[in-house]
Structure formats: C-alpha cells, structure tokens
Length: 157
Image (cartoon, rainbow, N blue to C red; front, side, top):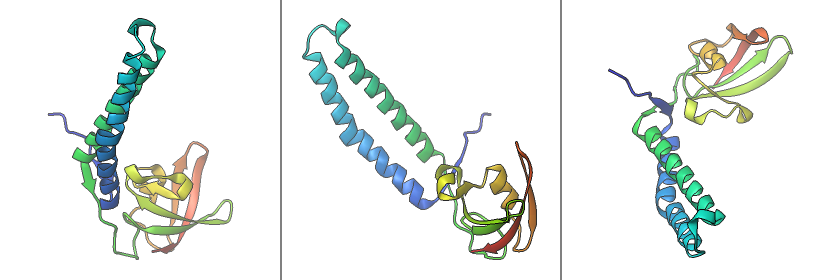
C-alpha cells in the first residue's frame, strides 16, 4: 500500500499553515472570483486577456490551497529536544568549520521550516543528518559535492 509522505514541522508552523489556508479560502478566493467576474464583463472571452489571467490566477490559487491542505493533513508535529548534551530536533548547534576556521550557529528544524539564509537547517538535509545525535566536542564529516567537509560541535543549546 502507498504510504503518504509525512511533513515534519513545529506546532507554530502548522498554525501558520492553517491561518494561510483560511486566508486563501476566504479573502483571496473572493478576490480572484471578483477578478473573473470583472473580466467576464469585458465581453468576448476568446480574446479577453484579463479573463485568461484571472483564470490562471484561480488555478494557481487552487493549487496552493491543495498543497497547504496536503501539508496540514500529513503534518507530523515534532517537539524541540530538551536535551542540550546531544543534537536533536530544535537544537541550536554552534559548529566550527575546520577548513575555514569559522564558527556558525544552526538550528535543526523540520523540512517545512528550513531556511538556510536564517541558518535553520532541515534534519533531513545531509548537514542536518550529520549533526543529529552527536555531542559537544564531536567532529563530524559531511559528504558534499565539493568533497568532505569537517565540523567540530562547539555548543548545543
């Protein structure tokens, strides 16, 4: 039997998705319906670019609604690890990039909350997987397209 994919996320992320879904199904859906109504009033639909654009927008909206519903229905709520001696979900980990002698702090999050620019990395990413279950002082090696990267775990919050 086919198993539906699960999406790891925090309670906060699930709440945000539910709010976005309500907005899209109420406010945004009415706006798009109004655009279609106005475009229809312009006459011949075969040569009506406003109507075509409004229908395209409606398709995008329904696609986004379906995507968010799928995320909500298949959400797997993960609690932040309360341990500070081992890297887990929700941990903030300060690492030393051994090659470049640079310190960076990352937060381990579910794939739905990953944002590398904000140093929020997914537990499913190669780097996230490499950090999981390690302790302060451990040196880890991550296989990357550029080769093997080495990091030392300096702190876990």
